[in-house]
Image (cartoon, rainbow, N blue to C red; front, side, top):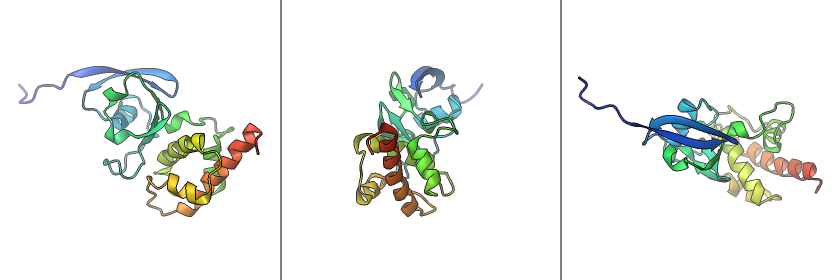
Length: 169
């Protein structure tokens, strides 16, 4: 007989990228691990596991949230958007994704999912940022490749692409 009792599993239901998903997981499972290991959505990366780097940023009800600091059970009945839910057609990229490609902002790519979700939410509320405002918007995300100039350029280009697509440019 094992010294430790098996941890009870809870059915956790979350609407992820517009699809209702349910999986059984322990109550202490982090949202980042739930998304990656239980739902197979590996686009959400875990860097520091302390909420500092922003690589695990997802949108919860449209607001950026650190998935490595949130228990999956607290996301129950909420809408979660991962990087997989933002422009999943390579022939028709989301403006933020297209801007990252055009501005060479991808670097090694590890931090990119957190930047894409953060910038998408930011541009929803600030459609015409200045370069200084773009820097402030991404200040909570770390890029270990130190490519911030290209990422700031991508924020500005994504805003421009959004305006073009909306016909307001």
